[in-house]
Amino acid sequence: MSLRYALLGMLCQEPASGYDLTKYFEKNIGRYAWHAKHTQIYPELNRLADEGLIRVAEKGARGRRTYGITAAGRAELRAWLVHPSSKFGVRNEYILRLFLVSALEGDDARELLRIQIERSVRELEQLRAIVEEIDRGAPKAARLGFGRVAAEYGLRHYQTMQDWAKWALGRIHDGEPRAHAKAR
Amino acid sequence: MSLRYALLGMLCQEPASGYDLTKYFEKNIGRYAWHAKHTQIYPELNRLADEGLIRVAEKGARGRRTYGITAAGRAELRAWLVHPSSKFGVRNEYILRLFLVSALEGDDARELLRIQIERSVRELEQLRAIVEEIDRGAPKAARLGFGRVAAEYGLRHYQTMQDWAKWALGRIHDGEPRAHAKAR
DNA sequence: GCGTTCATGTAAAACGTTACATGATTTG
DNA sequence: CAAATCATGTAACGTTTTACATGAACGC
Image 1 (cartoon, rainbow over the protein chains, first blue to last red):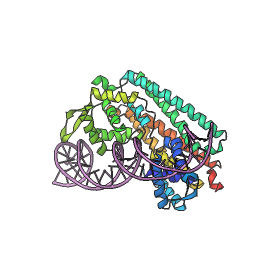
Image 2 (image 1 turned 60 degrees about the vertical axis):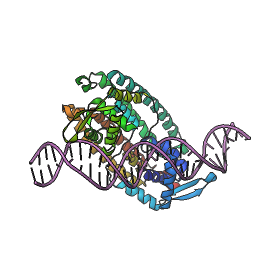
Image 3 (image 1 turned 180 degrees about the vertical axis):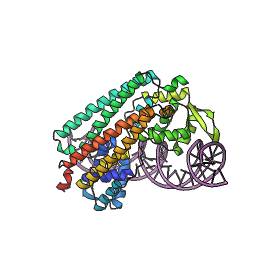
Image 4 (image 1 turned 90 degrees about the vertical axis):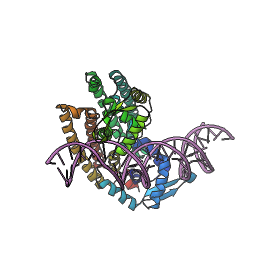
């Protein structure tokens, strides 16, 4: 059910085609908030159009259809955002891996945590480059999806992950690796 | 496919029943890394047992079966953690909502962001209480799932979310709400 | 003994991924 | 004119949720 709201939210910012939206998912929103592929996006767009929440605003070359949000669509999105819905449903394999690393034997865990930290350093470097590019003008890129907002989140998120992984590494060093490994 | 590794990871820390694991998912790992319900956990445990990756270590009252990981299970988990698999597949409705808020009209967005920030303040307070409890002894709670490691992640994660939401709020205030609302 | 928590399951429906498919337009 | 990219789709399969189901043990 979240997919439709993600789409409405993106179309609320600016009109876009299914192809555009697929790219936004890949680059921005899909990296941090919600992931979807074109095979799910196209049918959902057709459904949203049938329900009158979005509408074809423009037809382009190669059968391209640019959709815009309707008043009904905006109302639907707003209603969803306002209503509490305190239930989560997190799925993040990257974080899962970091959690599970700490279940391994001490040496293994240390080695794998170090690798994960290195990876997130590289991730951060790439993100910093993207943010700089956006901030130094690049007006088109800035508007794509949730460009700047997403990038800022990514920056803070990966920094947090890295700090946490280092904290976890320190904890393993400090002698309390797996309380139960000994007890077994 | 991630579910089975989440289960193996938890059983690697200490033996547990399907019922225990369901609770760990609700309280710890499911809040930050991977979410699953008992209707998915029980069949998966039976499959893992059939494959020899886990085994019934103890039978208790009310049909309770406590599983322990086998050597094969540990090897399987390790192999998965070592191999790169750089593809993400994030799904986090909470973050999605924060992203989408910025797609709304200025006033609406400000109001909703404030509500979200208040929520995460409360969330943080609860977490801090849990962490304190764990650190002040509470040896059983500390061992459940990824208790302390998960709580620390949660702490840092929610603090980051809150800081980011405030940053986003400031950005909306500073006159650049939705570049395209005007252009249309 | 009554309500709650413990403990495990099944089946249908909804959601999401993978593999397959097609053709138009642009770029070099 | 060949390769890359743009652009949209369908069908089979796998994963996850929702609704339904059952019964044992514990606390009051």
